[in-house]
Image (cartoon, rainbow, N blue to C red):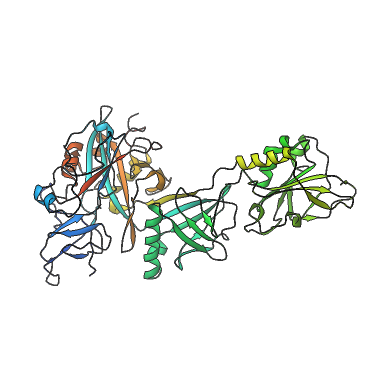
Length: 538
């Protein structure tokens, strides 16, 4: 076995008569070294030597006791000035605290301002594995006079992925193209959306369906991406890209600046009135829909004179052209560096010398001004200041280019068993909006249809919310909050409910005084309070 582990099921299970999963310094079988302790918090069952950590780097052997290394994250609406952000659970023994090699932390007094100010997240809480036992925290509290229960756990997710939104016009790769990390396929390019391109990264087939190396690199990539770290990818037949949640994507070594204001047709419509009287023709170059002002309905409504322009590509509707060029990293997400290359000769019957032509990209990053000479050839000249101001306004209306990382996971039967003995009742209660699902305290969108499929923005989650186990799988927090009466109705583990004060004193019910800390964090301003949303208190 590897010199690694996790914690779960230490002595201290309160309900008599249930099987207890005990972590001991003596062997569980004759083949195990007596100086090691076995962890059963995931299927790997690491055997860990004294002073060593498990394969997930989240659990360790501390004097023959299995301990959790990272803290349980607790959210507060606000933190008092000077309040310690990282403290031991109050129930931790003095002997264990004195033996710590870590820097000393101030003892928590046990004082609690108001239960309505505190929410225990699944970050650092441990898992329900081997699945038949209750979640590590089943917290009873009050919210606006209503008795509430929050079931708190970390899920071991094989069925999970990240949906990544990249704000850019640059060509990243063809739809369905493989996305690679360190040479291994870890996802694919999916559909482009308005002003953005989308990637699907991770998923069960890459975690478990390929080689061991593919699974390992996929898990490492997902952990880093979920924890808001920068990850480098290459796309088959496309670009090299660095993605970090909340940061501008770096495409082929260049940080993106702008998300386009719209397609070429939309840009024509938005700014048509401002161009009127200053230009005779405008072409907004776009990989998908290139707009031509005088042919566009906006130009017609302004009674603009036809210019005689001749566009390459496939005409869709008046003033809207598809496939004027190939996708690329040039103007408007096309492969062109010379915008005149998408024009055919002007109609000599309609066009006239002196015609003023603006060609711009959908972000305004590229723009050129031309005047037709006597032979109706476009000659590039200095752009008038009035026109430059409109091009600048196009850029002003482009939002900053960002990478958005959404965690998408199916919460299956294993972690549901930590909530109730009848998992389908939890699923039904969520669909009936009786249960609020959060991910590290962050709001989660629950997909319609069967099962519990949740999606959350990693930027709204606490830092370092994600871990891995070498099965391989992703470890992520999840919390289910509901009225106490609704929890009882869905067959919840009522005997394991502990008040918030006791939870903050003792830690997880299975921890039995083993060293672990709790970390106080302020609820992000963008997040609603997990216990204060309708219909919970409606």
